[in-house]
Length: 112
Image 1 (cartoon, one colour):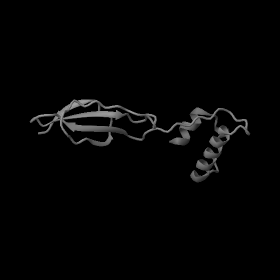
Image 2: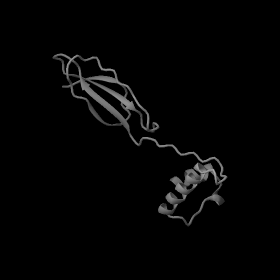
Image 3: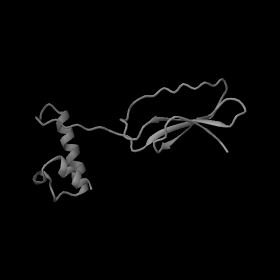
Image 4: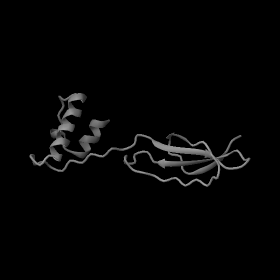
């Protein structure tokens, strides 16, 4: 699957068929390190850390109702290292639950 995607991106003759996954990771790290150094001239090499899963937070609404507000803070595939601000309209103490999500959009749910 990955090999097919790489073949679509670059020509097949440039793909090393004799490199195992450990060697590939080390080689990628070496290329990235070389791009960060002024001692080597390299082609542009970009690396981005992305989230594997989205992050969702949930909290109960204020009062006697048993509604839960769910908000996805980070979507799947978002760049890491970002900050988010969550404004919550509550005047008392409350619990905030965070978990990995499966692409949940902001919604209001009722417990049944």
